[in-house]
Image (tube, rainbow, N blue to C red):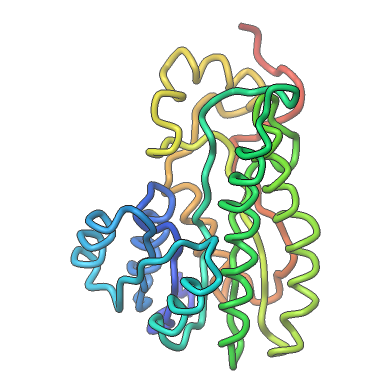
Length: 252
């Protein structure tokens, strides 16, 4: 099916990671000119860019205002931005044990980074375009032991998304902002947390008893970016979580 993304210039943040690299490949498969962003994974990003024949590779710490500004200056005129970059802290800590330092670092790496990415993209937008934010089911149902991450993702999927979708039309009446909310997804960030035993445990609240692959999320990002498939869709959250609910569906 035609997506209308051929020759569109697309920035994917966090493209050196699992979901980000899957998004970059999915956009490239649609004929888009992909700009690959990385923070620490320079070698992986350069390998991906060579594989895709990418339009460019840009490095930036997305919590730094100056570095984000330089990233967008280097990325060129963009039509689409997939704000994938984020950090899930692995240590399980209840709020009463959660250090303020980690709270601030997690909000910076997820919420502040998404804000700066969205601001940079919308500042340069001169025509219709699409911004896709990446949240998490943690931002919808919470995540015990990761209140910092859940709070950041909830802000992205709630107030930030809903404000942006109303503001972006001031730039162009056809510009759109949407989001995806992945559940458990097999990626480098969750390595060691999606063993067969873990899948059996966490999938008790899911209709589909499996975790997502990065491509499952990337496909939905592409659909939301498409002016053909989602041209009248904005301010929406697509949950990619196998039918996750807040109750146990399956017996142990």
